[in-house]
Image (cartoon, rainbow over all chains, first blue to last red; front, side):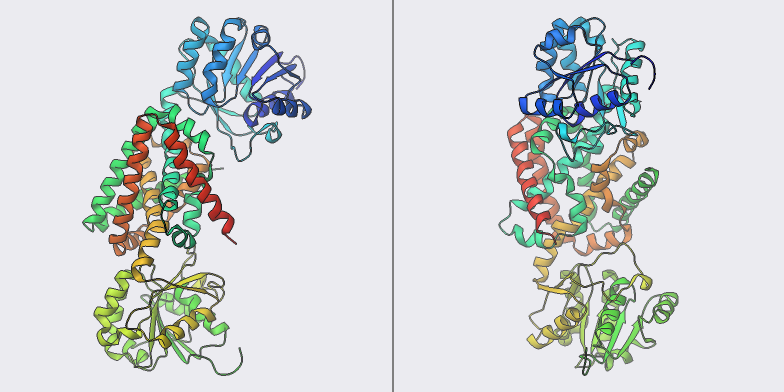
Length: 293
Length: 293
């Protein structure tokens, strides 16, 4: 907390929960001098300014990134290519860019396309932090404390640049993990994106029936837990599914094959196979839960 | 609470959470004089006796049901046919039988086969009460307070007999609903049995991979909620799946068709269809949650 801040100027695109908490975290750690914010609505930027999440609202993105040390792109993934293309020509050689996107292969492809020879300045990141609330008002300096942030470094990155971006997330309190973009997308397709798709599908399947009220009236705690994520934001999950389409299709096909096997076991009354499958699942689920802090 | 108890003698098969709580509920309401328990292990019967859940351990089932007013079969569904066959010849004409099974078409078929001309004395029930804990020690007089109990009366039942069994569950505090056995099984296949199957399948699908640790290490709160029911009891869920096989296969096929549609939408990048499906689900899930007490 003493001495010179590690970074001088941060430019944040998207001053919501993810971007705002990164700004507040670095500020609380005394590791940043100035924070400039860009966003889609003047209202959210004004709010971020009033809450002290940012120091200034930016006017000219090219001008602001020219002398920035750090740029965080914390918008929905679908908006990132346009922002990258806008800032690429002006990005100073000292500037490091990171992001908060929940998919990585597509963001990396967009970054390579936009940044070209400057792609080495982009160190992709995915902070795993809850999103029950959103917007600058939900941002907190300690959002990332003890949370995982996955970096998916590029072959073009220097070791020093990866270390500097890692350091920025660590100042926010995050635990850093490294995966390749493909590994990242496969893992999150399986443990996050697919469960969301399956939960949405179950509720939709019931909701479109004429006698849905009858069904919903007997749904209990198992249904409640299984479908909690079906109350997630439709546009956001549409974008995540599309952004991670390739890995999600692979995982979905794998899952459908698994369901087909269970269907066959059920059809032929093979209780031993059903029980064996359930037992492997229960053992793994319990081990997972007991590993959690 | 004053005056004569509504029932004189209750015989309970299975003195665990479901059977024990029914016994304690009727006793607390002052609506039963004597409770006789049967069970598979002497240890659980002794515990039930010590806890005051039952007044006596039964020795001869035929003898006990001959002069019983009420018989509750609260064992796993797979054990019910044998118990029904054992008591059928001795069941007195005054005795009403109900059960606590979570599937109904199969229980009804077993009852018709076992009871024959006495099938009208059987009024099937499914109490919707949590089962995080089990055994006589978990039994509580108020387990059914405010909980739903579904009765699935038979064409053979008299209106009076249905009313008496309804009354017994109501003395325990339950809210009574009536469905046909087929309706019951269809509803619970959709809102309970299928979600369990899907959750078991997802965890199994990850657990059998060589690199499962990598996947589990990034699983977060969405995964936690979706997979909570995958920690359920494998044998119990094997039996429920087999007992409700026909309805569950129907629901599973319906769900697989729904997944196929989502897969096609994802494959062709049809964001509008994905969003529309997710939106219907979210709206329905939120309406359901806001209806809950």
